[in-house]
Image (cartoon, rainbow, N blue to C red; front, top):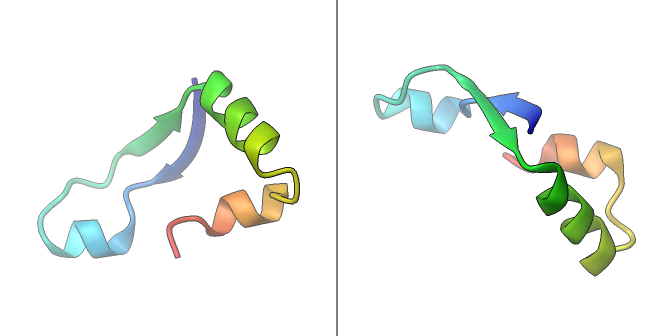
Length: 48
């Protein structure tokens, strides 16, 4: 598992706890395979 972010602010504002969120490496590899133009910087923008 790879830590990708903390709980987005929008979810925190409706009561979610601020905790680390993780994604399976296999899921990241699948996304990269299906969307070859997806860069690391785009991954960091996903909650936006």
